[in-house]
Image (cartoon, rainbow, N blue to C red; front, side, top):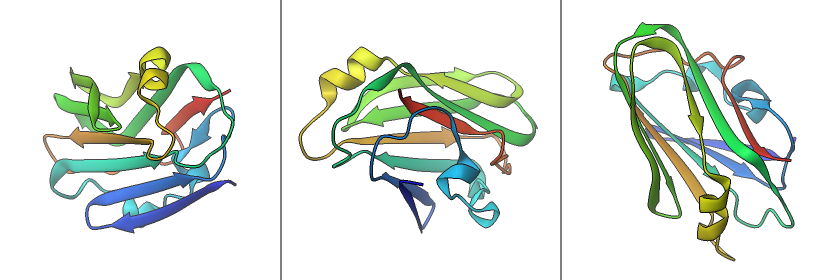
Length: 139
């Protein structure tokens, strides 16, 4: 696996060391069950693509987050290199799918820092389903 996971207070950091093609579950990324709770209803995951080398993004980069129970409205925001690229409300369910605009991400890429930060605000604390949550960034 070419990813490294660090847990900081209220934040999961996933550092990609190279572009890994296809779907990667949160379990595949190395996120552990004890880190998968949304303390206070908040989730923040940083996907760090700095220094991954030659890569091509998937035609529609995707993040799917599944959780252990149905919840009402959740708020999702994704920032790439400090620019908000997604800001949406998701209404009622046990998972959320976030489809990212590949061309927008590519236009914001830099030679040094390339971080995608996903913020989620749930109406209550939930447990993230690591085996059914995934990312698909690269082809």
